[in-house]
Length: 366
Image 1 (cartoon, rainbow, N blue to C red):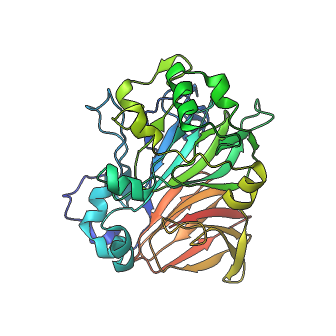
Image 2: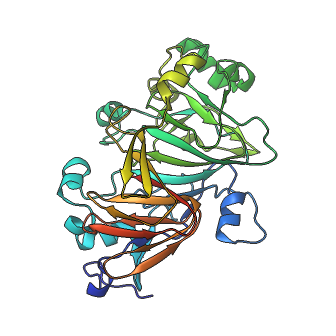
Image 3: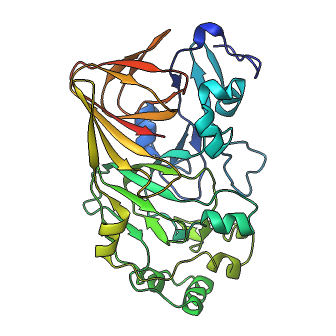
C-alpha cells in the first residue's frame, strides 16, 4: 500500500469502505488478551494495551509517554493507507458531510474503542461538556456508553460499577482518596450484573468502574479526560499528573455527582433497551440502542440480517461486525468482513449491498 500526500486520495479508491486495522493504545490497567486472539497474535496475553481505538481522531493522554504518538487510527482505503484524520482532511464534504461538520466540526466527532479488561478498572469519573468548556478549554466532556460483547470464561459474575449507591460526602470521598482506602470506597457502590448484548450509558460526573473479564465496545465524546481516584492496580502506580486531569484533588472532586443512584434507577435510566425496529430492505432489521433520548453526542443502531440486503446511506458511520460474516459491495469495490472487523462508511458513499450467506450482526455507530 502507498502513503499518498495528505491532500490526495486515488480516484479509483473513492466509493469504497474504509478499513480500520488494529490500533492498540497503552493504558494504565491491564487486558487485551482477547484482542490479541482476534488479531491472531500468538501467544495472546494481557498487557498494558487493553484497548483498540476505532476510527479515532483523538490522541491518547498518557503522562510519561508524551514522546509516543498514539490514539489516531490508521485508515486503509483501496490500495492506500494513511492516518484517519489525514484521510478525512482530503475531502471533508465527501467523508463527513455538511450536517456532521456543522455539529462536530471536521473530525470524527466521537471516540470508539474495543475495551478488553483482565482486571477491574480504576475508580474514575469523567467531566461533562459544560465542565470541560468552563475549566478545560475543551468543547468535549466524556459522556460514554458500553455495549457488552463477551465475558471471559473465568468470570462467572461479570459486573460494572455505575454511580454511588451509598454516596459519601465530598469530605469523606476526599479522605478515602488521600488514604487510598479502596475497601471503604468500594462500599459506596453496588455491583451491577451485566450480560452480553446489554448497553449502558455513563454521563459525565457519574463515578464508575468496569469489572474484570469484559470485552465491550465503548463509544464516547472524543476526549481522553478522566479523574482517577484509585492510584494503583496490579502493581502499576498512576503518575500524579495522570490522576486529577493535571490539577489537584479538589479540582477533580468538583467533577463528581454525589447523588444516590439505586440499582433499580441504573436499570431504568442508564441501561438502554432495544426499540424502534425498522426494516432495512426485505431481509434485515435495524434496532435503535442509543439516540437523542440518551445523548446528542452519538447514535448506536444494530443491524441484524439473515439474507443479503441493500443499505442506503444518509450519514457517515462506523460499522463493527459483532456476529457472523458478510461481504459488502460498493460503487468501486467489495470488502469481506468477519466477526469483530471494523470499517468506516463515508457520507458520500450513498449505497451498500451486503451479501449474507448465513447471518450477520453489525453495530452502526454514528
